[in-house]
Length: 347
Image (cartoon, rainbow, N blue to C red; front, side, top):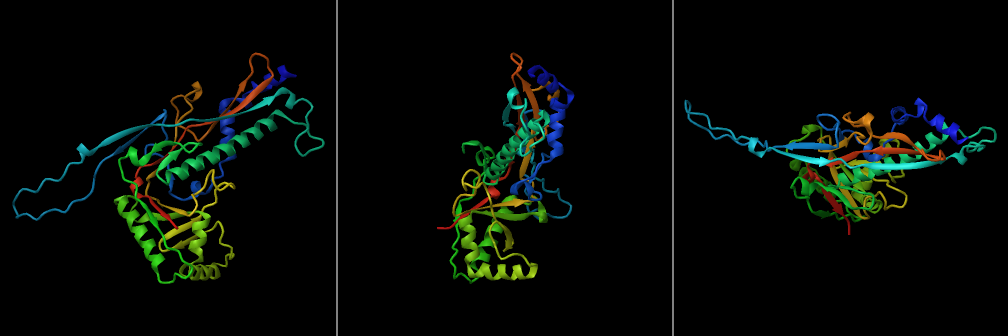
């Protein structure tokens, strides 16, 4: 039975190229941060064909031109060439595997079926699905870190601190006063202050197409929605659009900002906005890049443009008793202008 199993695994249907194409066809159902239009964009020159990504920058702020007499020489403009910088970043690696034992296939019925027997295709697809869920959660964790200024690993350690990498100061945290009786327009004023700070820090990037988003924890969102100022507008919006009154895990535009009650993992800690916090960031400005490097650990993918994920099978060549379904991804979620991020809290 084991030898038959290994022969099946060596068929073209289980090749690395076909398994990778299979997960592409299955599609990635994005979580919240992966679905915001214009938030994470690919690199300007396309996905890299090696494990390094290079970011170039230069100063190009406008300057007021001093008047001069007619007929005189024009004043020379500033050259931005000395300000040019190129930074290289190595794209991290994510890898996960699940093992299929020969005994798991022989004479085993399919899950939730009395007549259908377990097949190799079922096992491979099931394990790919489970690994892809882990990958999706990991990508979301990296996105959530990036919109706060750092790309984080699974244990919370920092892979890249974008403030340090690009030598930009991350704005300090602002305390929001969200009293239930607040109805004096102060919340809208604070929204305007936050919006102006982000747009000024962008220095024109994105032009008029930039939108401002605020990811709120449950406690911050509840306090925000409980204020009289916001509650009146929310109730009017609900009547106008015939939406449900339940505000949990919804989004609401107020003061020029799209506020979102961010739903992370069910433990409210693995992937989540910290308690009593709100995180503001711009979408449509191009400052968040989603980079995928190629799987250069395998010859067939060397020097090819990176893909979101790769899948293949590793066989037990000694005893023919198991096969590992593996999936790799080489992602980097970057924030090239952390000075445009804002952070809020309630006491």
